[in-house]
Structures are given as C-alpha cells and as structure tokens.
Image 1 (cartoon, rainbow, N blue to C red):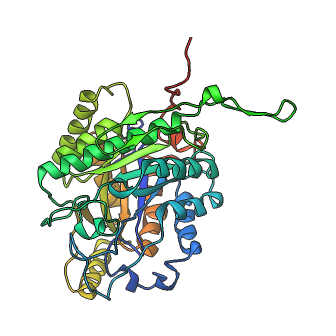
Image 2 (image 1 turned 120 degrees about the vertical axis):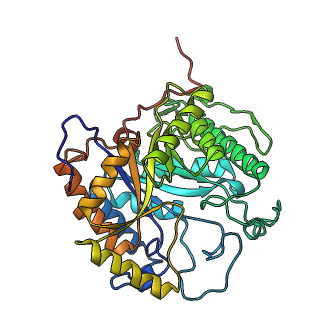
Length: 407
C-alpha cells in the first residue's frame, strides 16, 4: 500500500544515471532501444529532454577509459553487448544549449586525467549551460586502462574499483587520496579568477585585472600545478562535485571533497550506516558546516504491474545469458512500489536518489511519467523547477572565492 502524503516530509532530490542503452547489458536489444542512434547527439538529447520533462535535478553520464567489459578488471571479447562510448564531458556540452534547468554531470576518471584540463572543461560546461554543470569523479585500478597511457602500472586485481569491487586497501587509499588532490586542484583553479577579474572596458583597453588572477601553487604526491586557470571563474563559482562510494575509504573521499555522494545500500540499515559514515568523514575533514547530499543508487525495472517488470527482467537475463547483478540494489516493480521504497530509505537520512534505468528507452519514462507524479502526489517532489543552477536546485549556496581579499 502506498504511503499517504505528508506535509512534514522533506522533498526528495532525484537524478538519473545514463549509460548507453541502459544498465542491463541486453538493454540494446529491447524494442525502442535505438542501438543505431547510440553514438548520435540526438539520442542523448532525447534522453536528457525526457529527464528534464520529469523535473529531475540532474543527469550523470557514465564514462571510462576502456571498452565496457563483462570482466571486472580486463577486456573481454564479447560482441553481443554494447561496446564503445562518447566522451561524457563533450556529450554534456552538446546537450547543454538544448536544456534549460536540469543539471549535467559527466564522469571523469581522475587516475589518468590532468586536473588542469578537467577544471577548464567543466568550467566551460558551466558557462555553456548557464550554471548547471557538475563533475562526477572516479578512479581506476585496471591495468589495461593504465596501459593506454603508459605512465604507470597497476598489479592484477580480482575485482574492479569503482564498480563495487575490492582492491588492495593500500592501492585503494592511494588512488582515492590522489582523487581528493585532483578535486582540490580543480576547485582551486575554479577560484583562481576572482568574480570581478574581467573588466572588459573597451574605452580604456583593459579587459582583465591581472591582480585578480591567482597562482594556486599546489604541490602534492601526484600533481604540481601553478595556475591560474585560463578560464574565468564558473557561473556557479564551484560546479557540483560528486563521487560514488561503496565503503569506508570512498566515504572518506566524499567527506573530504564532494557535494554529493552516491551510495549503494541494499536496505534501510545500510542507508543509515552509509549516511553516518559520510557525515563522520565530512566532520573529520573539517567540513562540518558544508552541506553534503547523500544519494542512494538503485537500478530500476519499472512497469505498470510487478509481474510485467519481473518478466521483462527475466527476458533480458535470458538474452544476456546470465542473471543481471549490480553493486546497487535492483528494484523490479511499479512506480507506486518504488515510491514506497524511496520514502522508506529517505527516512534513513538519504536526501535523494540516483536511479539507473535498466533500459533507458523504457525505464526512464517509468521514472519521469510514473514515479515523479506519484512522488508529487505524496508531496515529496517538486512540481516546477525552483532554480536555474544546479547548486540552486540542490540548495547549495554559491561559495565565496577563496583567493578574493576580504575586509
């Protein structure tokens, strides 16, 4: 039975994670999946337009540095699943002018990507979207991805980091510390131009006030970055930074440097533990006064009745040749049942959810046209966009520039 509307309940934040034809490996074989369009701008524009129609806070775009694989740490030779990606940052930039309110959060692998390049790319995305950019940071310990760059090597591991797998604790800590440094460099570069550094006075010939551009002089184990950026401070000041976290070491990354953490609890107790861990790490990092959202990740199969959803999942599993598993909880059922679950999990302290459509062409509409109206009926979701920036949608203030002189 669905819960009754509650005037005292806090509205939820909702995002969707977009990945190819969907999160189930056989999603591309479903009717309406549009496999021939996967590498076109129109395909991604249509998905994001649907998400914006549903008033969602933001979409994330998955990305990686190797072909998708059924093996957690190595390439495979499969030809029956989607292989190949477009660059997430470039897709987000292409979609930005076609949308008006929804946040755009591409994934970036910090392990092999220079923070100077990422700061410039995401700042540019913030400009072309008029303040709706974010960045989802992730790491990789996969040896075959490192081989693409030739600058470092990793030992063979039994499971992959970032997908719910375990790697040696020392390596995990090293990569996540590096990611925290990566974010710190990116954030300093975003601040390296003060908000009023651009004068743009044609009469006097002064375009920029050089005294309001700052060297960041960052020195770390992996990065030595002088700055300043070549891109003025983004419209949001600091675009939103997000990270996926499955356990204590990754919770520390979220606590140290993220605005949004995606966690993968499978029940209410797990949600409570994840929220407590993230907030404890935030306090330990000296960020107790900084708001941090904790979103729960779920894979969703949504249909008008539970039996249809279950049958569809079973059919997809048959096509894939194996039962689908995920690091996140897998929900199979109706929009009303999903709303019940989200309401239950939100009581554990989660402020929002990032839903992964099992089949993008089917389950995204299940979210926007089924789940959203049900949450609105319960008073748990917005009926209109209330802000024009991603920080605004998430209730995050525009931060002061760390380098600007204060009285």
